Length: 90
Image 1 (cartoon, one colour):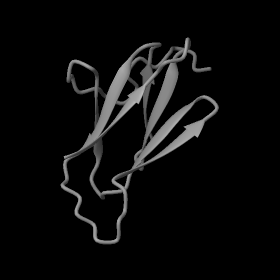
Image 2 (image 1 turned 90 degrees about the vertical axis):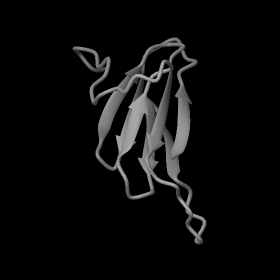
Image 3 (image 1 turned 180 degrees about the vertical axis):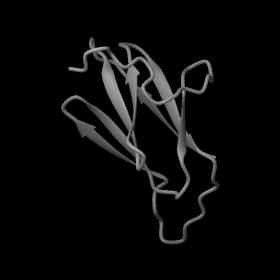
C-alpha cells in the first residue's frame, strides 16, 4: 500500500482534490488526512506513486499507480467525496 499525508497548518479550510477522479475533501485547520492506494508499486521506471500540486486554494494529489486512492482521517476513518465541503465554496 502506498500512502501520503496531507496536513492543513493554515488558519482556513483547505481543499484536497484527489485525481484522476476529481474527488474533493475539505480539511479544517489542524487536520491531517492520509491518501492511500491499494498497490505495491514496483515500477522499474521510477514513477512515484503520487504527484502533489499546490494551488492557491488547495492541494491536488494524483494517484499514478492505476488504482483509485482512498482518503482517511487521523483516526483511520474512510472519508467520502465532499467530506466537510462548505455549503458555499469559496
